[in-house]
Length: 298
Image (cartoon, rainbow, N blue to C red; front, side, top):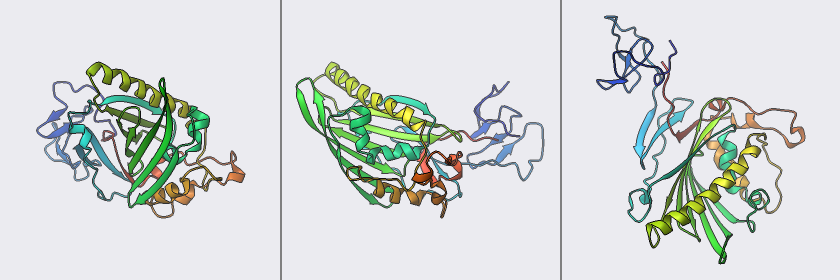
């Protein structure tokens, strides 16, 4: 009847029982495939007593769910991240945000090189190259990083597996791994999680100090992006100029994650900018991606 399986107190019972999840509203019990297995006040279970289920995996110390608006099975596996189980790296340091945007714009950040200097105040344009390989997009960048002891040449390698999950490896000041995931919450908001790992330095205090400074800088940049994301529209095709970075490669790669023909519905021509609004329901257009799971509703 529409109750949220994760919300509400279950009187006289438990949330998980005999391999099923118990709905707090009437205590119907559902298995991992969404089938109702028990109703405490009925002998017969209605044939239609079934809720949607998601393919879920636990990997890299995260729980990930496959989302496909067309109901298709997963088309690829998530990678194993070697740093997660490596004693030379710290545990996850997690930051989270709820942002009024679409992960289309967030994912495009990695190839929008010009904004780093003008919005974030970095020393120069990152020099970026992008390469698409099926569902994977790799973006490699070189950029100057300022330190109290002078400038350092830094490297950034971003690998996206779909446009909701990625790894970003930073080198230069301190080797840092950033695992990002973005989950659509509703028609307007996404939940973004950044999981940082730092390669251990001379001692725990040094690692903690340098790592926190780097995490603080990455966090600052994301929070500077947020007012832009929350007050912009998705323009397609974009008006680009020399030096804007490999945005065209990103857009071509992105199209595969939408049901046939729907990516064009996102088009907002530049000459009508401000006159049209983009689609408001992200789930109507995002075909599939690995994201953090939302709890099913009965």
